[in-house]
Length: 343
Image (tube, rainbow, N blue to C red):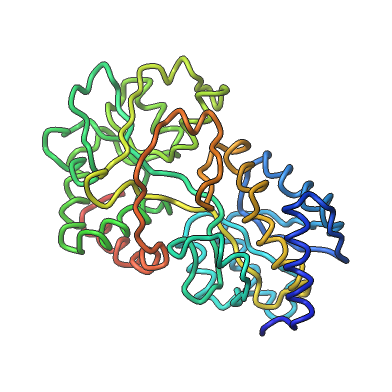
């Protein structure tokens, strides 16, 4: 359902006021279902409330639980916004019928096309590059792209997450989109052949495997590494990172694979205008800068400044593949994982 012209003008005026630093007060509440688990997001929420007067009520959980909950609640769901990580989860929410299309000039102007759903049901607001890390003491010639990770030269050297992890699924889905299904299966089989250990743990555990010497090469999202450069996290700090090098893969080909964090308006949102205003706020310079400064992510909006910890990783070319198309490859990716024995 399209908002009324009056409502659209109110939202646009409010966002313009936010951008100029003038408080733009609205009425009511916003019910946010979020699977983002970062304490630093508190600042995003409090700033939005300070600027708009809109109270944010949060329900937090993992993405699958929240999607199932919204489906079960149906037309009576209080959810206004679903906020989660990875395009495959956002696409799953769309397929479940729990999101609705949004007509917003602000979002269309600020969010790149490859970071939004073709039907405007979800939008990406921050990104993480999924790149190659390696032990500088043990690896003289690190792989320069994802495909090379399957080279027999790296047998017994690679650590990675399990096939059930959404980041693993999205990476293989991107390989499918960029190189075709047959090449993707060959890559997955080569990865399995090169594992130093059974797939396990989160991204921090992949970095920890490099520090401990359990593996020599791993893949992780950049924000875990950048965060450890500026503060100790889960037992890892700048001193541990000193012997770890990194490669932004495929710079002469498709570019580095990107994961996104994004959200959409719930299909039965009782506070629809406030929900659209919140998404537009997430696309503002202020919020975009905080995604980087607060959580070491890359902004979704081009041209927004990076936090020093993120900028320290250097310039790179991201993969501009349509993440909505990548998300549709997840079932094929899971089948390939099963066929090659990637646990």
